[in-house]
Amino acid sequence: MIKKLFIALTATVALIIGVAVYLFYTNEGVANEFRQVRQPKPNLFYVGIDVSATIDPVTLENLKENIISRLKNFIGEETVSYHVGSFGSPGCAKASLKSVVSKKSPKDEVTFNWEVKKKIDTIKVSQINGKTNRGKPLTTPLNYFLNTVLPKRSGGRIIIFSDLMNDDSDCSRQTAFPELALTKFGKNTNGQLIFLYPTPSLTSNPKLNRQIMERQQKFIRKMQKLVSKGKVRAYFFHIPDEAEKRADFIRSQLKNSIPATNFEVIWERTTKVISTMVSAARG
Image (cartoon, rainbow, N blue to C red; front, top):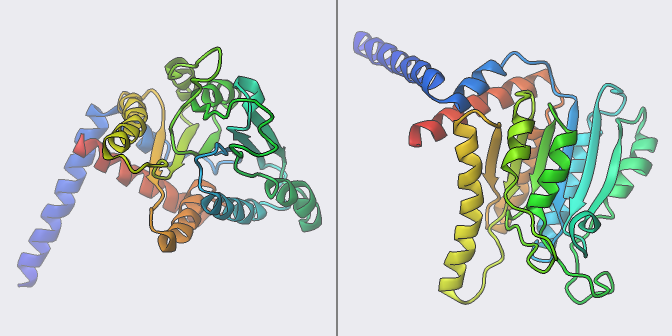
């Protein structure tokens, strides 16, 4: 019995190694992940938050709480820098983007609470008919946001909370899927994009809902195509629809996305390699 178990275990390990070697040489996305295993702990973070009118305010509040909790771990580490910005405020293009926090990690908790926590707490979902509108179009300028942010953040870690539903149709100019900006960003393989995305806002019309879901999946497919070619490192994590699961999920994913200890870094890189291999194997 023990001998059979040993043979089965050995065969399983050999199979896993064989699959890993095969994917390393046939899928550039997997190869990129293996190459990054020994890179130093990340110290440059950018968090982009979608505040368009279709975003759930409760989910946004939970996200903010956990972002503050993660960034608090870096108090006193002046080698760490981070930027928190939002997109989807009333207006088009540049007017819809806001810089909330951009600084080195503060030396003490008092400074952190005043210069980081207090500012992140001000982030709110845009109102459709509220005073914040003032006649300006409400958009979800995801493509414009990526085109603007990526060229300035080469080698950085960009965490994006969004429903991935790019919509700037009410603007005089629309921004296409930013493949060039993504490819340029991806040349520095230290950089990575992490998307935390909820199910988009749906309607009572099943046909329209299918179209909405397809728009979201189309964006993901375009990104995954670039990932498989090794053009960019990007990961997608769907936020659960069930309210009782949402808080723990966001907490866990932000812990992985913004690692503060050596153990968290090792765990994050191991899970990234495994998830990338699974995605590659599924095609």
